[in-house]
Structure formats: structure tokens, C-alpha cells
Figure 1 (cartoon, rainbow, N blue to C red):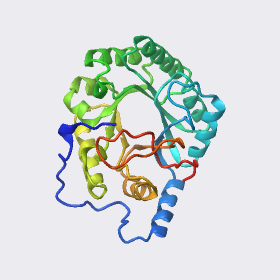
Figure 2: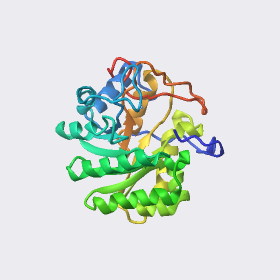
Figure 3: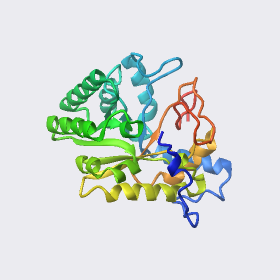
Length: 288
């Protein structure tokens, strides 16, 4: 989540941009067919959830469950993004690599220094074993104010020194990189969250808004290797939003979408302050 009240309704696009795949004149059946065609040809990546009914972060998840859920996504994406390196999450990049997928592996950082130490060590170990294509040191810790900028820079430097052959970055909202150039300068790759929904932008203009977000983050790269984005065009429950977003955003840039929702969670309502659970392109039956 990247909601900040001062950024709500700040986007003022003058017109609705043309989409890579026009969708307005398509029937629901044609739109679904287009969605499936693009998905079966593979999107860039998915942000992966390994949890099922009654489970939550902190629970120890067996490898067999990770494998079963990754096999659902293998045929639809080139990359998998994980959020942690402990409590079963270490199996995500290992199994993904077996399945022939690229990995963006995250160390979950927070206020607990011992947990942070475990996460960083596990991330470095996974990278040294060859399971990490891109290492993400933290996810929205500046947004949550769990760490100071200096503390985060120390963690990033520790990982870069330990695994110099691996690209290292940090994940946060695009404006954090704009406001904190030292974080952008420390990253080999900027991993920016571009969420038009959390700024109150309608789905019709969200692609243009997301391009603006992404462009602002890219300006702070100062020659780094590249940038990737995770996208949340809208949070409307049901299939129409997902069906429309993949044709609209699919060809544009290196976007990792959210993958699988546990059965007990609801996507939430389309209001900015809602506390929503996990969400994604796959529904409660783990089918598209």
C-alpha cells in the first residue's frame, strides 16, 4: 500500500491516453479472450503470495505448498517476486529457479533488528547459491517509517558488498525515490511501486498516471541499470478490472502484478483508506 493523503487526487491528466490494446469496443467475451491470450503468452512477472486459507506471514509454509502455487504461475510469467527470505519464503526462489523463472527476492525489513539480521543473512545466502537475479533490500520501510534513511542505506550497502555480482535495489513508492536521491543513488536497480489507485485516479487514466510516476523515479536513477515496477491500477472486486488491466498495461514496461489471493481475504472496496487483504489476478479457487 502507498496511500498518502497529500498525494490523493493530485493527478490531473488532460485526456484519456490510447491503450496498447483498445478495450472500449470489445464485448466481455472478446475482452476475456484478449486477457487470456496475453496471459498465456506470459506477462513480465507476479508478486507472489504463498499463503492459503487461515495462514498469514509468520507461519512456516512447507515447500510443497510453495511449489504447488508457483506451478500455477509458471506458464504465465517470466519473473517471480518474493517478499521475505525466512519462514518458508526461502523456498520461493529455489522452486522458481527449478521451474525456469527469474527471481526478484526481497528481504523483509522492519523495526525488529534480529529479524532484519536473519532476513539479510538469508538473502545473501540465497544469492550466493545462485537463486537471486535481483535482490530487494526492504519493502516500503520508509513509507512505514520502520527504518531511517541512514539505516536503510547501511542494509543496502551490506548486501551490495556481500554479493557484488547481483543487482541490488529497494522497493517503495515512486515518490520516495524522488524525495530521497541518496536511496536512488545507492540502488543498482530502482524497484518502484506505481499505484494510481491509492492516489484516487480512475482506471481510464491510470496508465498515463502510472507512466508519470515511473518517469519521475527513472529521472533519479543517475545511470543505474534499470527500473521495474509493481502496479495496482484499481482495486475493484471481480474480474473486469484484472481483465482490462493486463491488455492495457501488459506491453508497456517491466511490471510485476499481484498473484494469488487467499480464500479468506476480500479485495476491499475502491476507497483510499480501506485496509485491504492480499489480492491478484487469481481468485479464491486459484484459477484465472
